[in-house]
Image 1 (cartoon, rainbow, N blue to C red):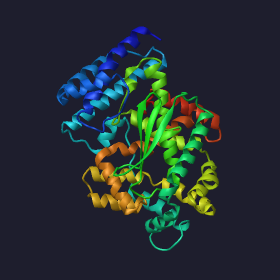
Image 2 (image 1 turned 90 degrees about the vertical axis):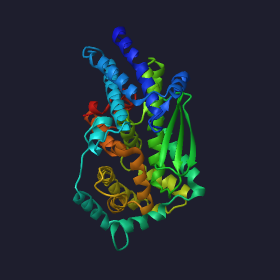
Image 3 (image 1 turned 30 degrees about the vertical axis):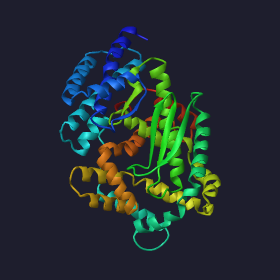
Image 4 (image 1 turned 120 degrees about the vertical axis):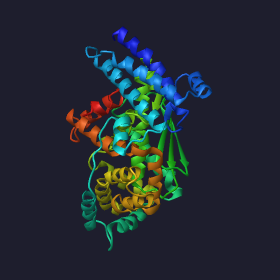
Length: 413
């Protein structure tokens, strides 16, 4: 590893990490994980550096990074250089937003997450909703029928822990067949309330995560695999473990000891976490696991599993409806109630879930693009490299390479 370039980047990484912690004093959602020196966190709290000073220092780091030529270096160092550039750029954009700069939904997505998210007309979602008409029982409007249909797949409170434990165990088992996990990796599972999200992974460092499941609203059967894979295996928990092990500990790259949520890294984190569900359960394997294991654990009628899976697969195509609701709402084109109604009509959410989702828009704004657009970009990248559904070993190989590298969104396209 070329020592001069590595040293140059080390000299930038430390002040970068400290700036992330400084921004965290102005936005409590910004620092999603930190496991670097404790004295740096204490210093950030004590100093509470003003936003204008943070921006000035970040611009100086950006200038230093832009002067570095890493084109002839090894790929891993080029990726590290690009990673720092993108993360600094995102940090500056967020500091400007905290200082009052107004960005549209799409401008913010580009500034933070290094992508230009697609947009779809209302007719696109109307057609997809209509496709559900023939497979959802009952009469009347499709969103109402979907809501009634899905109620029979709610996991009752007394069954939650058993269902989620079974899903987590299976996700871990499948992941460990292909990925060498640190021996001390572990996580704790908690059930919480009064959150704008359904699940969250709080990475604590040293290969440990706290995974929280929000029980404000009914939890449907498919969420067990979704959350077990997305938050745990091979999703966020594995992603953070591999980055910490490979870079923060092995190489001493201190920038990987801190994770700023509103940054380019999040598109990779969320995209791989969502694609990880497909990697772990290709084809019909998810439906078969749910039918044979989770339906009985939940005390549900497993004869309904096939049709339920069909409904879920088609409904998943409506995920971009959430982006459109967020875009229009955050751009002040529609009200909160109108955004919630859009989510009911085109994302097939219950009115209660739709209201919860608008609170997510308030808190996390354009972050919503990372789940679906991130998934699509990650899937396309891995399939271009041979990781198709009919080549599961190759798919796991490419997936593992991606989640244990500093590659960012522009590197996927």
